[in-house]
Picture (cartoon, rainbow, N blue to C red):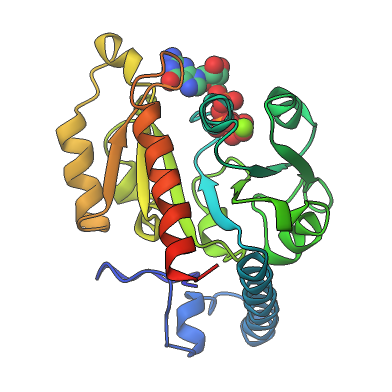
Length: 259
Ligand SMILES: Nc1nc2c(ncn2[C@@H]2O[C@H](COP(=O)(O)OP(=O)(O)OP(=O)(O)O)[C@@H](O)[C@H]2O)c(=O)[nH]1
Ligand SMILES: [Mg+2]
């Protein structure tokens, strides 16, 4: 998984370059060598655990989506609409990641999904992302053998979550049109790593000066050809298309025997 890298060539996910330079310029730190060693060890451990998570999900026959966005882009609201629509046809497990509180997990309760919560609040004000060991402990609390789909709602943050492979099969990013058109250029890592970008809050378009074509052009500079869809979790517009995407991923991976 790419991390602390600043490539502009559109490559995503796998980076063969093991040189310390992929960790960015740490030369201003007196401890730069130690920092590189520690970061390498953290990421190596994370990637080993992510691979184990993916294996376990595959053995259980569950497809996993890592749902990422800035805080408040609409992940939980879209998920609650999604659960309502998938109920009875796809068995869903949710791993809800938040720094503090069970507020989002509570919002998703009672909609037919198995839900488990990860609070990342330990440490410097709380981890800004989920990592593979956290997700591993959450997977153990879900009835994986009974699930078709596991959605991991990552911590709301436009940067950190993209750096950590948690063992997912696909990455979907929710983008709120209140965030402006230029964010793919300023914060490219998550946009580059996404398999799908769901443009949310389209019901607010009449009240904003958001330029959808400009946003898409910026996005495609960073991640050429990435799939997009336009939704409103509030009104339900486009949510059916998102649910069909999820259904297609689940069916395709089942047919391919990759899970
Ligand atoms: N108008 C409008 N508001 C929305 C839409 N989707 C979400 N919201 C609102 O945006 C706010 C944040 O939504 P959440 O679903 O909590 O966003 P989130 O990405 O889960 O937030 P975090 O988990 O805190 O990162 C809430 O007030 C929602 O009601 C939408 O499509 N249109
Ligand atoms: Mg949320």
